[in-house]
Image 1 (tube, rainbow, N blue to C red):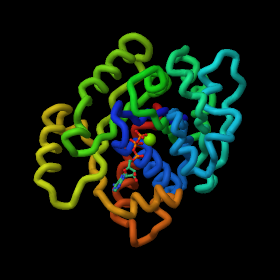
Image 2: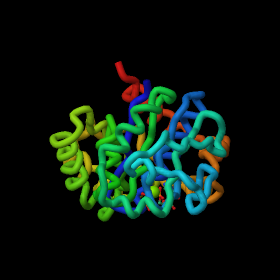
Image 3: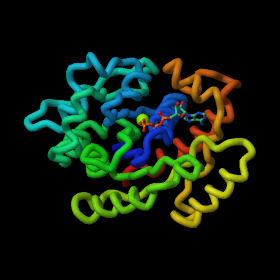
Image 4: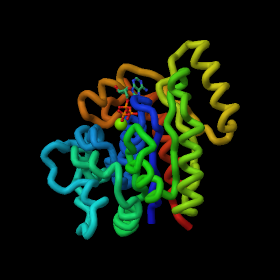
Length: 252
Ligand SMILES: Nc1ncnc2c1ncn2[C@@H]1O[C@H](COP(=O)(O)OP(=O)(O)OP(=O)(O)O)[C@@H](O)[C@H]1O
Ligand SMILES: [Mg+2]
């Protein structure tokens, strides 16, 4: 049975969605199956995977509601390996709610996948807490920029709090660094700072370089692996990260 990984950071725009979908792209390329759970009312991963969050009826919001039925799992446009539970704008209303419901719902479906990837919203509110309570693995996504590292201590505290109060299965699996510029003293300094904050072994290798093709793939709603040689360095990086996550996600 695949385990559940939450990709999070309270900051917006630090590439949580890009990394979630890069991992899904790598899983599909390897013939592995993943379920993307879109826990962000913005619905970016729902949209990129081929569904309109504004028109989907059943969404992750329903899984946070009382008396919900089975999860509305949709096939993605990316192929048979990637499924999605869509977001909806009403998810916003669940910033206050019962965070354990999602956990129960995902336990039922995780067995069908090599991993379940929860794309969290940019906050440490109830939605992200629900994601952490439902997860076995927490992956913090950061950018090596001054603002990109701000608040990472609060994210680690939130993981600790969920572990103490709700979910002793949860472990901080690691930190994934994305959008690393080719040559930048500033990024190098921030990377060193990150190592000091979280410890070298917590940072997953490799980091993902900053490249226009990543932006293009998101804009065109396509898996990064579909660009062949144009994206091979990025695809290789996600392949290595997926391989590490798949090992971590295999329950014993
Ligand atoms: N490696 C990269 N190189 C270049 N651009 C990138 C890279 N990774 C992500 N981006 C771009 O950075 C932007 C923010 O990424 P993304 O939407 O994944 O962040 P997010 O943390 O999910 O945002 P939000 O908090 O709004 O959910 C996007 O425009 C994306 O295309
Ligand atoms: Mg996002």
